[in-house]
Length: 472
Image (cartoon, rainbow, N blue to C red; front, top):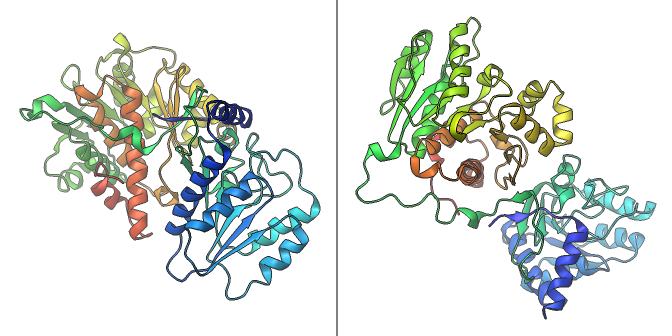
């Protein structure tokens, strides 16, 4: 199950519950050291130099314990209690600049500004511009507020322990945290904290989607209607359809504008492609509907926008609104019979929906998600970006743990919208919308991570070709 996002005080409460139940700090430190070393080995190549920096607290003990599981040579350990001495030890190191620094200087207990000497040491480490693996929290970052205490390590990867700390999810922390990863199994008891924010773990989808029955046929897996593509934006329709195909609904019909029918239809085979017409009737004929990708050309007929609003208010089928269609939705009306409704804004689109700025959205992303949901009839909201959020006006919000900056390409969102709609078209996947949507977002990011392991110049067409495959 997902890991709750917790405060430092809640983490301490969890630790105390573990010690009361017979667990020991030594056991946890040993386990953490093993996990840190495993992640560090993934970040280096044979023969690379590694520098382990350990402070005087348990964060430093974790880093020191990692040394036992690292290569015999090329790993240097410094226990730093005096920052002035630390500078000399680090920068007088024999050999070349380290390929990786394991940061165990300060842990989550730091809640006051660092003095000038410690801040100077951290600044010098950042100036090395080398890979950094921070243990639990980047040294110098307040794990509750997400603000640096005068200075903070700029990590490449932060391996946080047990559960994500709330400050690490704030936009102010992102430049320091780098890629946030969670090591949930560190030897603590079951977490006694339940929160509204929950971090997705890979094991959450181990048996999902469920296996298809041997007797299944295409009628069992749903019919999806996509309304997408206009002059200058026909590629969005194609990418959306390909993303939907990877979810494997039974049938997909793409309705596109007449101006781009030929280039769209010529690139698709199994997807049925038709002209969008003012008298198009989607009522009751499909198990899910997606509207919006590539509908950005000037002069689109008003009836298309009216149709979108009407379906949003009246259709009992799941419906996904993406891109331009976000601006066509009526506010304040709930869908009939609790029908599934989904919107997929990035921060700029969320700002338009809220009549705010993108900066205001980013400053409090959970609240922005809640407010969008409430304004649109308690729909499901996928607020895209770093650590994409999935949720609605009440209940749990999932925080996605996958993805990387290479997703910042035109068409990436089209693939995601299509994939999500393809999942929701399947009756068996409609019972738990949060899990289905969480899976779709997680799979999208995990596919990007897998592609990036092999090359950093992959393109969105390759994302569309890989999404939905086995990850991990």
